Length: 432
Image 1 (cartoon, helix red, strand yellow):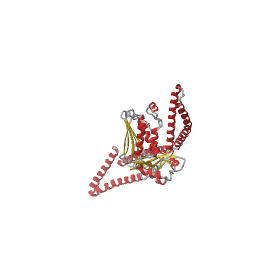
Image 2 (cartoon, one colour; image 1 turned 90 degrees about the vertical axis):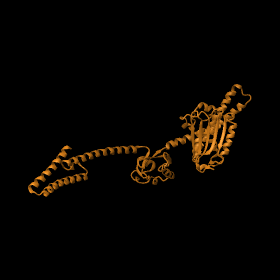
Image 3 (cartoon, rainbow, N blue to C red; image 1 turned 120 degrees about the horizontal axis):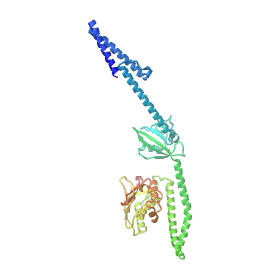
Image 4 (cartoon, rainbow, N blue to C red; image 1 turned 135 degrees about the horizontal axis):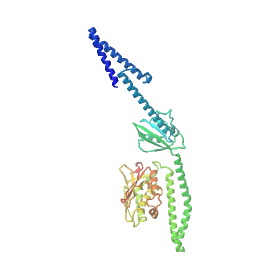
């Protein structure tokens, strides 16, 4: 760099020497200044022309202009930067190529959408699952290719983290779950996963449970009937009376488990439309449930207090609401010590949902157990649950009833502070 500028300084010095010599020889200082400076500027313009031509042709090494001084330094710096850019472009191209190869090999369909839901990129799995052509469809709105109403509603809903389960538009035997993730500046990453095998396994499990429960119910009823006859027989030997009573108790428990499994199978069999169900006078039902339980299961052990909005009613399936309410109240009775109070509420919350709440003063539930409470046969204390006659299916039934009715179940509890189970029905089911 120092040599380049030194050469430029010498060149400028020669211009001044030429000006001095011409001026002294001719005495015309105007010509003495104009002639050397014109030649100096013309030389620089020539170098500038060669540089621009070289840049326009792609800065190739063989076509680099032969320059001296600062111009040679400029050409060298530009060439070096271009070389760095080429290396970086190759690196980026290699990274992009690896990314495309990786994304194309993913089993899940992957589609990149812009803010207007226009397709920018898709992998091969997107073609197999969603029918998107990687070469033909970029630039098209995805709604023009997938025309199902639920997909259009989901795309325009703007709800974050909510997945959509739908039938594949290219294969009716495939069930997909779609997920949409926002990234970059207004872009979306849409993924489609084939869950057909999982759905088939769930259907097989449901069918097996339903069939097995149905087939077991009849012989178990016969066995329980004979055990009741034996238990009430006056001539039953004392040595056999206690085993017969225990067997009859377990038979009744098995019948309850089978009934609960059949209830779950029915709840899972089909969805409930928004307008299905009949008008339920929930306050009257809760008063009846509370009165009956206070005289039976909670007799001399618990106090049941009812706080309801007498004008709040809902549209629902009565048998399912009955199962939901009784399971929540019975659970509170079974899992809290004698002498405690259970408060049952029925009111609207701040968002307009109709909510049934059951609050107890029991020992509470540790945080790690709460997410698993609605799983089938899950018990915080297995020994205590069996002693109190629980089947381990009550909260699972409650969860499925709420799902069918478009509602939600919220569980609040802490060790030593009791529990609150709240089942909230959506606004469209509320009737005031």
